[in-house]
Image (cartoon, rainbow, N blue to C red):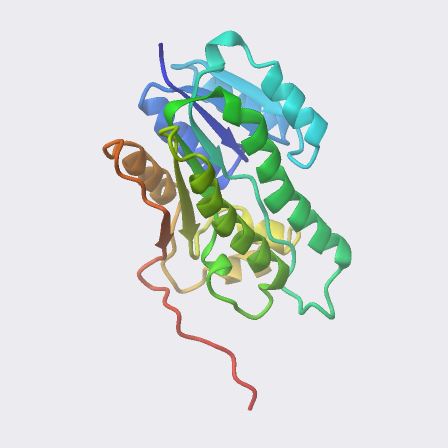
Length: 247
């Protein structure tokens, strides 16, 4: 039986890159996202393998559980789960930001990840693998990172505790923690302001979706007895320098 990988947030960025990478590795794909046209386009592009699309908002708990319960039989033996769906909204200080943006980040980055993990765990094969997409923002604070960084800190700690709970099952868990990467991330963060989004990447070299896809692929090929707990990855141009000072 062919292996199956389940990818959330598959319609852009890391998720889309991971789907393409694992299609080349002859995996069956379950791709989840909110944009139906993008899902259908990706499914058509990856027609060399079997693809099952799920169109929903990951914040909808009932829809997530129902979609997983109704997976076709040939997709029910999940080898890899990639919890990729997530977002940042705004970069304002807490006192200036909208509470609704905070709630959307919490509901997506934390609760959505919990829903897919809990729903799919019974279907993850023995010796399977769970990849959670965290962020360096979960490890290192920066101005305007506030709630986004806090949600990614949750993802990191949940990944470690999930490993504890899964001991004896053979299921591995890795938290991937990317730094600056050019995807739709900044466009979403700045709510469609293309100029502001592009300015994030001006004059520097950044990670791209394929970089993260390759890392996940290589981790998945490591011997079964090897578990990378967390993997923080930055572009070579990015360091921890740049803490803010009041002057």
